[in-house]
Amino acid sequence: MTESAPAHGEEPAGRPAGPGVAGQIVQDLDAYVLWPLVPLLGIDAHDLMLDRAEARSRLLAAELTGADTRVRAQAVIDLMNALWGRGDPPDPWWTTSLGRACAAALAPQVDGAVTHQQAADMLGITRGSIAQMVARGTLLRHQDGGVDKAAVLRRLARPTEPVATASTRRPG
Image (cartoon, rainbow, N blue to C red; front, side):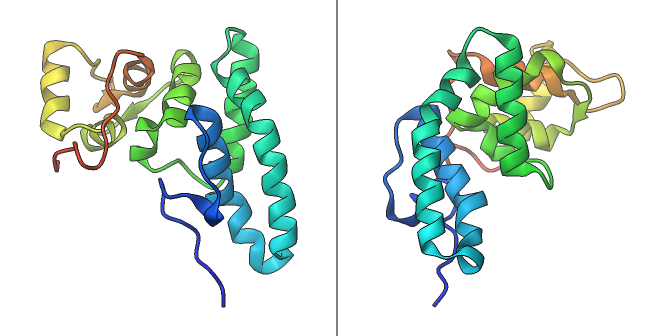
């Protein structure tokens, strides 16, 4: 019998999630990278790789949240390629501790726009709130339309912003 990967936010493979960014690195690597390999490589290989991910997670979290911008950028590149190499993360992922840490590292280097709905999903708020923020100038309107993606990432990176959860988020 094949077990399915846990839903985002659930504990993967019966292992408890650790604190903050390091815990989410392990959780996301397990759910999106390691667990899908179990049918091909077996549970023993999974457990070995998970143990290695757990051992490295604190170092990766320190690199991702450290002061050295080059180290931060490389940590984001490595993690994002491993987790989302075939596409972008789901917009709500950006409200997680790992998503916010990646946003802080990416914001100075990101170009482009996102739709009002994508910005709302990334920030965990309603589309109407995004429209109000753009009208007030709290979020920048992108020259090509939509919302400036770097502005959204900068807002995510602010330590004083509360992180929305599924139970506190209003439908958009």
